[in-house]
Amino acid sequence: MSQVYNFSAGPAMLPVQVMKQMKEELLEYGNAKASVMEISHRGADFMAMAEKSERDLRDLMNIPDNYKVLFMQGGASAQFSMVPINLLRGKTTANYAHTGHWSKKAIAEAQRYCDVNICVDSSHNKYTDIADFKDWHINEKGAFLHYTPNETIAGLEFDYIPETEQPLVADMSSTILSREIDVSKYGVIYAGAQKNIGIAGLTIVIVREDLVGNVAAHQPILFDYATQINNDSMYNTPSTYPWYVAGRVFEWLKEQGGLSVMAKINEHKAKTLYAAIDGSDFYSNPVVERYRSWMNVPFLLANEDLNGLFLEQAAERDLITLKGHRSVGGMRASIYNAMPQEGIDTLVGFMQDFEKENG
Ligand SMILES: *Cc1c(COP(=O)(O)O)cnc(C)c1O
Image (cartoon, rainbow, N blue to C red):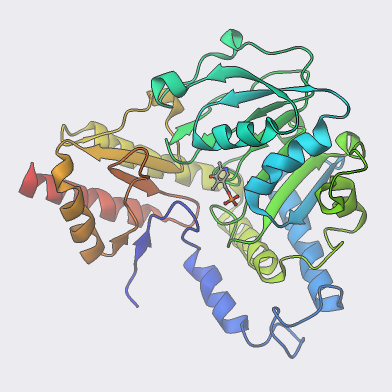
């Protein structure tokens, strides 16, 4: 198989080294005499893997001791429900930042549980800009403040952390592990695995201990963070294979040197691609410079009639899944941790050749 660079937004590219390891271990996991997919989650082999994966994630993200780490199912979308279920704690209002497609979905779900105060709204600028925090309208009675640090579809990423006394909740599905963050600033961090952690079927939730244990009795038991915490994320069968893959990715990240090293690599990747886009009249990206995402880079061709040809010729060069989201159009290059600098350089080389031939 030749080296293919997969720019899919999610499920997304995995580190080749991890996939090789998955292949090697597929039939027999360690001394288990069976696949990791075939063994009990309560057996010693799986439990050891689960504990190590949590330790590695805690190391990587420097997660303080008063935070619990949960390995759950249901995707980030289930967290759209679980966050209000767990964090309202008798209150009736919550603050939500509306900065893109995913925060909009989180808001729609929260509205089933409480009054949502939209404290900042980027819909009028088509998700290309974010107001300064001092201009947000926060309801002081809110039980928490929810935001989406990186909007995967628009490629809009915060360059600051909202400063609030209320528990801060972040949907980090498409930015977790891309750089170092200060976990202590957050009440809850959640992320579906299929972008920057591993494969679909696993959701990581990092929750501050004191926020847990206030869920109303009629809510689903599985949706109570306390249930998950009290059972080490094994109240019922967890998503065992995706959990194992995440563990292998955490090990790979540690081998790379951890998140400070990944941050430098990711920043350089993004800068390379944005420089190519900005350096040409043939390509454009509409996002205000300081809020441009390191992980998802949408770009438009000046002549949209060439979109089909661009995608076709890119695929011939083993640059795949570059089609933009239908709401934005054009192209989108998702360049998570698994995408090496060579993938960006190959893409930029292709973009320049394509412009020469068609510009
Ligand atoms: C992909 C994505 C989601 C949805 O994730 P699911 O796991 O499919 O529920 C939510 N939020 C963000 C920021 C995403 O990128």
